[in-house]
Image (cartoon, rainbow, N blue to C red; front, side, top):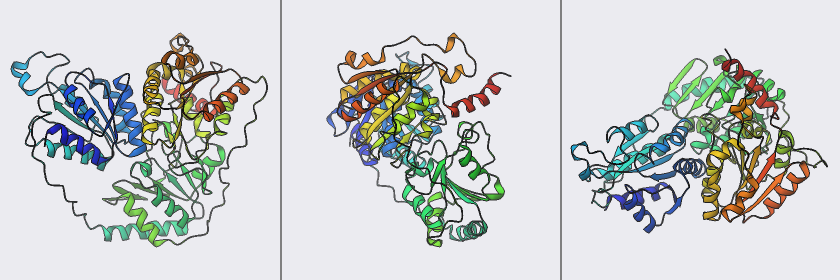
Length: 543
């Protein structure tokens, strides 16, 4: 089989239906093969947009692919790939490369940096596995190895495809037989005794759901554990929405000092905490303003280990631990009293009232249902968006750890393609929009209909609240005119609550059309959560 065709087959078997990217001469031959295959090519406006779209696609569907040319294309994917690595998103990066026959004498070929190894060396730092397909005989086995690493670790992989190798024959390897799992039953039973002893003795137990529950496809299993144990649960910022927030055991989103008082008190006064798949970062804990995981009262289940109090059990995976707990538990009356997070009250726009972050979130809340996905940029789209009531599982997405700006608009393209039954709402600051907002053109090209809310405060509101200055200001754009410029969709301007309400309802009711809503906000208006966070950040910025 030809190397290019084998790679296409492997991509399809891993579950991708689309490939994002921009062609170039080093990858043009492979692009022709992709075009002739059953995969759909999605040409974006910029390589970083392709990387973000593939990342969002992977988060929603379980596997994403981005394909670009060498050097000028591949190195523009460094940021999006770093984010996918940091936040466990299974993205396969494919880069074309100069042909093997062109490299003699260390030739100065276009797009080359230092050596023909430079780009691969960069990606080694931000992927689970890399391979340069320079040997026809082993190419298929290398493709399988890298994709297997992506699927196992839920982190990116990198393949480099020289252009004169695309149509070379490769040896098709036998399918890998699953490795025998190490028998951990004795260790698991020992750990379970300790966990169950803690749980039964607890009077104020709680569970914390983290993002890896979603990444490893364990939502149903974790939900079974919750319902058998009767525990109330919160999520971290990255894990927001991993379980539908309409569930009666859901209490809220915990983020240290940024949390509502009732949520913070419940978590920090708990005498037993089971945290599953939790990524503990500075942003997710309000700059570490938390004592959540006191080892003496915590059980922390990770993808490949379990921590119980001061004991670490390597090799006990989160899935095995949750299955074993479910087998030991029958439906249990809850020990802890709590107030479930209720659906928000209907939003009633006030005549003549300017839009604020608070009223914006309340208005968006009124439109959410279990077929709506929200993508939020870092900053107030994220921190204000924590008050959104997410009704579907895994229907809130934000790069809340790595926190790269520019994710939401290309991410809306990726999610719309990965889950065509979902209507996507993208919450994006004007600064972020000016980085990658041109990907609304990709949405138009694909006939997609996300609702893009541009939170227009004339600059970078997050940083203004730390140190103000003209470096935080932006050139004003007429965002509502952009659908007319690209010839697809409709633009709206909202300066008050009534205009926002009408625009959102018009956009929601027109499900076949892109909408861009320019939401005018005061330059210093930020959510209470973001204000608390920036007060902590300011202490670190000014020292």
